[in-house]
Length: 93
Image (tube, rainbow, N blue to C red; front, top):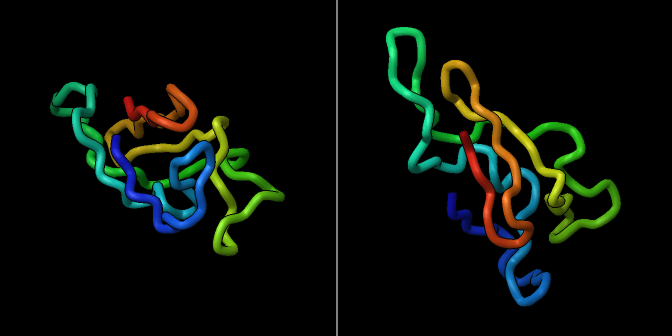
């Protein structure tokens, strides 16, 4: 998934940081969950879980997401999201 950080003026290693709640509502393209009568593919991120953002580091007054980021999608059943490559890739399954 590709995200547009809402605080582009704050950089880490030359790239804008992603903060709470930038992920919530973010669209998901390429969900791998199959379509069946009992399932629904994921289309967006609905939540992030505790431990996903820093308790001490903020950007623009908002907690910065960490590589421990995890969350859930709107799929049925809900799919997890997690960091694959810190600083570059978040994956939803």
